[in-house]
Amino acid sequence: MMTEDFAELHRVLGAIRPVDPRDGAEARRRLDSLTKPIGSLGRLETIAAQIYSIYAGEIRLPLRRAIYVFAADHGVTAEGVSAYPSEVTAQMVQNFLNGGAAISVLARMHHSALTVVDVGVDAVLEDAPGLCRMKVRRGSRNIRREPAMTAQEMAAALNAGIRLAQGAAERGENLIAVGEMGIGNTTPASAITSLLVRQPVAAVTGRGAGLDADGRNRKLNVIRRSIKLHFGQELNPDALDVLRCVGGLEIAAITGFLLGAAACRIAVVCDGFIATAAAAIAHALCPPVCDFLFSGHCSEEPGHRFLLRRLGLAPILNLGMRLGEGTGAVLAMPLIESSVRLMLEMATFSSAGVSEATR
Image (cartoon, rainbow, N blue to C red):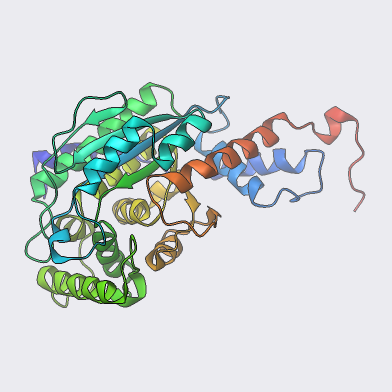
């Protein structure tokens, strides 16, 4: 796939650099000097040190938060893998834009700009504040019958995400939540997970948005047949081939966004299963991308735990959620900012005139 379509992807991959471990060490020294027992803030200290490392100690406060929800439809819904009809994708996008969805409520509450990205909704959406039009095509193809995307379509979706990340950097956004909307998208996410973590389909596949037992069995069969169609007995398929054959347009766009954000050195909070499947593709292409990622929460979808272990990410929250939309990521953002405020605004033992522990 070394064509001009992928020139931007390769440029971004070449621009990503891991964080400097010296910045993490400096952050830990700062945290240990604060007026508290060493390590007493628990994981908040780890989170703060990661933010400090991402921005090499130059953290602009208040953190400028933003939310990007990537929306697309999936041809595989024709196989009966979802409890909801595919037109719900467009209906929910409209609900986001009208302010009635869970992510809309959370965006208002947490004063975070919400952008809904139409990268592949199978409908013509009316213009509305917060809608970003980057449609590649009206839904991916049915992965049970053919690849989800052509190479050119996948490149276009990746590039859309990269451009959005670059725009976020230009606007000074420095804490970004990433979510998705797409009826049927736990099916491609489960296929991606099975292939990347080398686990049986049944181990990584849940009921999505409310399937019954028969529906889940049908979904398992569709995923198994899709993997066999595209990869046969291949044990280590190329990550871009996995994305092209069994992924989706919003998953590709999120992958591009995560890579673009890492190149721009922006902290990103991934939401649940689908966003983390995109992160797994990004990680396979460039492992240092995980230096810039946080996991907002642990989804109830079983494949999410496999992906988190693969990426070495510890979820900040575990609330039994499986909504998507970016909701778990947004709920974690105040904790991330709290960790940074504590690190930067607490007094040190020296500045406060407080005696340190003697042993």
